[in-house]
Every structure is written in C-alpha cells, then in structure tokens.
View 1 (cartoon, helix red, strand yellow):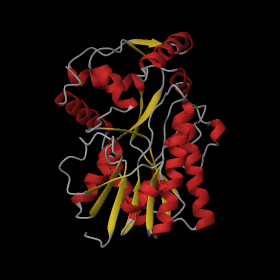
View 2 (tube, one colour):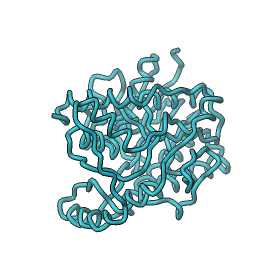
View 3 (cartoon, one colour):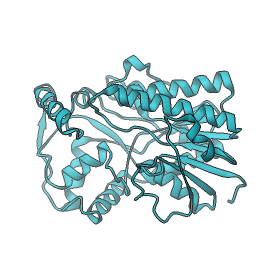
Length: 333
C-alpha cells in the first residue's frame, strides 16, 4: 500500500510511537515525525521519514508538521506514573492532545487515530476483564497519568461529537517488547526482575501485549475503525507472579517467591517518593502503583478482533523480545 498524502506520527521517539512509525514506513507511507528539540532520537535514527521539530504544548509549532498531512497518529504522551508535581502530567496530556487535535482540524486532516490507554477504563472489583463499555470519569482514575489520559480521551470524544473531529480511539493495554528506550514503567519491572532486584511482588495482574502488535492495531484502526469508537488493543492477562517467573526463566534466575501484602508497603512507597523529590528520578514503587495493584488489570480485545481484525502473539514472545533488547543495550547484565 502506498497511499497519497503524508502521515504524521507524534511520539515516535518513544516506545509505542516508534513501533507505529516503523510499521508505517515498512508499508511505504510518506511519514512525518514530530519531535521536540530536546527529545532523544535513538528510536528514529536511520528511519526513512521527515522529522519536524515541534512541541505539543505550543499549538503554532505544530502547523509545519501538519502541512500536507492526510492521516495523523497521535501517540505522544507524558507516560510517567509519578512526578514531583502530578499536575505536570495532567496538563501535558490535556493541553498536548487538545492542541494537536485542534490543529489537525484546522489543517483538514482526513483521519486520525488517537492513542489513548486502558487507563481510561473502570476496572472491576472481581478481576473480570474490562471492555470498552466501562469508561471511567477523571475522578475515578488512580494517579495523575490515568487521570490525564481519561481527561484527554473525553476531550477527543467531545471534539468528535461537537466539531466533527475524524478520530478513532485505541486503548493499548500494557505494551512490552523492543525499543523501550526510556524505559516505561513496565519496562523497568522487566529490567529489575531480569537483574534479580525484585525479591518479592504484590498479588496483581496485567494484560501484556507486544508493542509491534499494538502498532499493527493502530494501522487497522486507521483503515477500519469507526469514528468516535474506542478499541482495546491487548494481549493476554497474566498474574504478576507468573510474568516475573517467565522473566526469571529467560535469564536463568530463580523466580521471586515472596508474595507481599500491599498495605505494609505504603510507608516504603512514601519514603521512595520523598527521596525522588530530591533526586528528581521517578521512584520504582509509588503509593498510586500500590493502589492500582488492588485490581487485576485485565482487558478484553474482542471488539478490536471483531471489527479491526486485530490479533496479538503470545505475551511470552513479547517478554523474550524485550529481554533480548534490554540485554543488547546493556540494561540487563
């Protein structure tokens, strides 16, 4: 496929955005990548794409990147589970999403895929998988990141309804795999576990999906998604203990056996956050993460499978690809 017009990807210097950009380039699309002046370029180095400098917080700076663009993948986000000022995360994702959507409307972009998150969905107390029919309200979201993504998703929905924004929403679950350059919070868990620095864990669960399958889901949403609809892009549900055991097997370590209750860990989390305010480095354990761990973060991708033709490989393969990439980069000894 070699469609006319340009395709703009925001967030391509990051984890999911890089996977989307690479998948589009492999299809022969004319790809433009929006990057901040200060962004590390490791994930886009050598790609056959035009790079335009801009900042999502500055609407005017986005206009050069949108010239001649027919399709937009808005993947960029402030993906931190903690910040000294949580409002930084909320405002970055709210303002950035509002700006790029408004400028896309102004530029006459014909179709948009907005990368949201399963963070915008309300989890079930009984651990059953959640689908697209359970949207959360901002006050129900745990932590600044989830609140920010919920606010941004509701803004996109409002713009679709009131301004005719031609946007389809995708909600990735927990992407893992290669090129997790930062790394993401889940990538940090993989690195710490593979390095033998996670002696115990709390009893929670995640839905794990290969980042390249998430990228394929974005493209399927662009081609077949219904405007204004949301689609969960997930893989398989897995208890955290099972995930850690599989990581241990990949690196030849013994899996952690200590299952820890959440409540006694809160003082440790508060202490880690206090240290982080001094060091300015995101703590590995946070109070919000412990609050989230109360739930099993399980999700159903049945709608995306049915309407988009989405599919995901076994998450064990994604774990193996992630571990191999982190090893190559020297992040796992």
